[in-house]
Length: 335
Image (tube, rainbow, N blue to C red; front, side, top):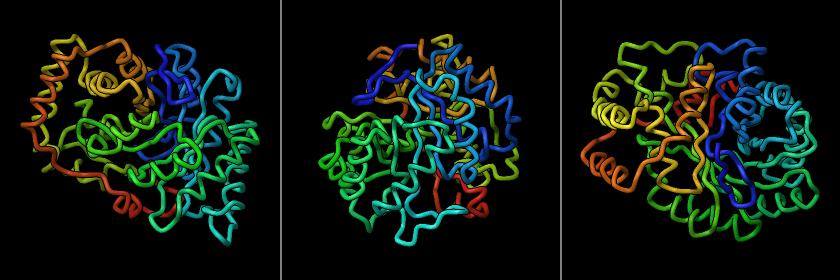
């Protein structure tokens, strides 16, 4: 697989979002199977970017990812995140994590769970509107100088926050939701990333699997599956969004590909600094998703897709507030 640059980090063109191995999308694989799949992403397909966070299954995902990547730690890029406004079991940080001490406690705890001496890419996982991100940027700069982290990023930040953070300690990446169904970052965030030389990491690049075409309005989502509360998976919205799937199927047929592959290829063809991190919990999904790295869309093909997209209305949304209603922090899912 080809590599691209997220500012100062060279990563595979498609990364692996690891959250789903622990929770968020229904039944999870056994630990041994998850570890096998995570390692196979590197060994078989050349994936080098692996993404997790402290909040995923309340530390459990970081622990799993640490176990899986330990034998190949020096060959991959490991990213994780701290959540400033959420306190997980065992955290005792009276002044909050948006403090120098709080941030240091958070990174040290992640290093321990991940069984590593450094984190390649460390994100602030949602940026509070009432805090100065410039302070966090300063403290991240200290962690970079000390070798605790190699680079830092922000998740779901506003353009103003991105510019402020980057002016203090250069950002390596911005991570936000981005897909054919969720394109708000195209208005300001992606142009700003291009202007400042910041990489962009797209979570939920297939809109929770909807763009794969494998789900219908009769599909039932159970347990801690976040799709229970994401409105684009309401029966009415799934039916209303069929024109988007029809476009993907037509394009996929013409390219001898699948709708999922076209969804990823569309994103990678639009910008050379964007890396999607889909979740993959089976050998078949890995073969399909990583196979998208070999599909290119010409300028004319991209233009044709864009013209069709202008005629299509997308129904439904994904809201953190709704996702958090699923239950306690132990089952919290927040990309």
